[in-house]
Image (tube, rainbow, N blue to C red; front, side, top):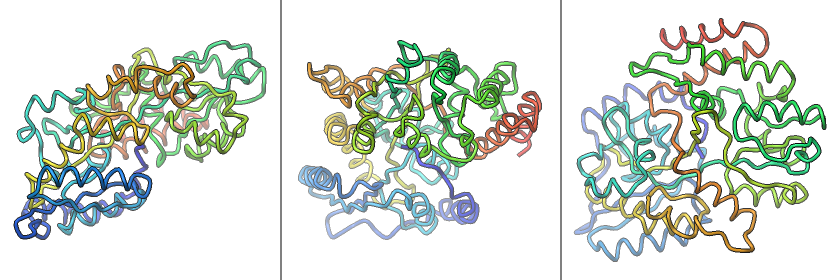
Length: 426
């Protein structure tokens, strides 16, 4: 659910203004309404699907807190990042904002969010999954509260695997490469599609960490210019040059991966469990032969999880009320209820232990099976891409040099070295 971040130009234009406004304490209009404080709550494209849920949630909160009223503003997904940048710069942002750590960390580095380490008691912090709490931490400061999670599973076409004589789906990248060769030889089809477009999802970057290669060291310098890093570059270069990846991986994004899987042209798709319903609608014959397995990983065993969080602008006029509402939205009971409503995972320990995620009914649907697989991955799941400034620039540098190696324009050694040099000298 981590969307592509395309706002570099706007971000650069607003950077100086944002830093000035935040340092000067520029705030939004008062959040008071007579004797009541008003908390403005911004979400990303949750209407109309969850309108009733949030109206009820807000009504319950206001009943428990008669001195606070909540004004809910739902923003289209594609508009959220530019709107947040503009509003933070102008001092007109909401008081509680639904973002993800990847984007929120870009503004956290500019002191835009209220730090939560002291206001949130240790016993409350302990209710959240520890690794997920760390996803909204930059340096030594926490800038957001974890909310709902999604972790990919491996959907695979059992029919294609049977045609290739493969009885089990791949669990590691090494097994994936073997399956890719076997399936191509037996059926002429590709096993999977992974985008190497710099503006697309960071799946390839995540593969480095899963294969045991950190992206940066403690000083923020490139940590992938190592023999292990070269092995990852070589892995993807070999798959492409051996024609085991579609040519479009260099030019098209994840949407193409979905199209190919639904057309029966690829055998594996890594995505969220809920996407099975979409496949059933768009390609029912493919859905019938689709099964789910854990996310493909490397020797590390690590699996990636996408996090949605709640942040509070430092400039809010109602910090206490905003924090109270954000903690209410993300508490154990409300996380569990929303996870059931939206078919996502909660980020609190107790919620994830609910039978809804652990016990499968006898006549479990494919989505229920996939959801259970997804939930069982959480003990080994982390946000693999660290919250850091310029992370999208690192992705561009890595992908550009990977593409050059895959196309034979550079050797793998040169591509790794060039990528490290460009990052370190940026």
